[in-house]
Figure 1 (cartoon, rainbow, N blue to C red):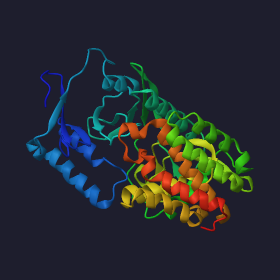
Figure 2 (cartoon, rainbow, N blue to C red; figure 1 turned 90 degrees about the vertical axis):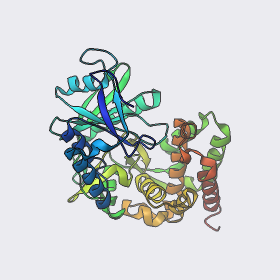
Figure 3 (cartoon, rainbow, N blue to C red; figure 1 turned 135 degrees about the vertical axis):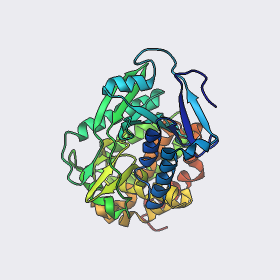
Figure 4 (spheres, helix red, strand yellow; figure 1 turned 120 degrees about the vertical axis):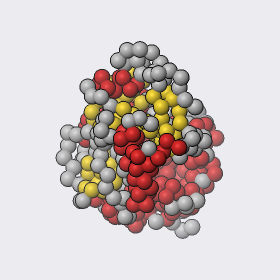
Length: 379
């Protein structure tokens, strides 16, 4: 599909129109090549070589034989009539864009890669298009502004270049972090996770009397889908006697720290996607999330088995963050309830995200482990 107007921008579709994940400008070729060279900073060596080969094909004109392309026409005239014009005005720079297309999920939003005419990446643009994604863009802007004000020797977040509103949509532009190497294991990132956990200080509180416990309970009570929220509240009730006798450290977490949201550069961990950043959660949530999501997405582990493993192996997973082995199962179980509450709040099942179907994986695993913990670990 192509545009008919002379001012339409023509994009090449990768890998193809049916399974599109990336649109890159057909012209200038160096910009399309730059978009591919810098696609997925978290990619491993094999994928990076593949992207470099595609970039070379675009740069030399070999990609002109690709059958799938699309033309996008400006909706109106004026410097900020479309999102591209808005970003150019905000950055006071001449930039072109590639477009990332993510999988179906409630928090999916347009993500643009902004490139200078020479193909160098200027930054990344996120656009909130509905209530949830607008709030996430605002939250990430607040997080990046805060992180820019603190010193983190082992952790680096992108700088916030712009935050504003375009036609009622929240817009964030952030710095492009340099490519590095993937993390070899969770051990590579545990020091940075611990550093982040304490960035606003730590509070040690009885788990069942903590503000976090009360907030989690209130969020579950507010969920309209009672057939899913009630099992989570029952799991929380089963944990209450255990939590009443457990003192946990509460601190800060990234909220979505995964192998594909980061890269390593020398002794520093570079992490992006800070829209779930928050304070006042049990220390260890980032490590539990990293372990479970990596197992499901990168390891191909069955989701229920991955949820089982994050609780069964909690002592080892959470030890690098200083979590007492006796409390590790409680922290991991609270993490499962937390992520379930998020999926329900966001409407992930309704958006087509397979992990949003909590009854097929998370609820069975959580039920088993909370009952075992309530029985004193005898099962």
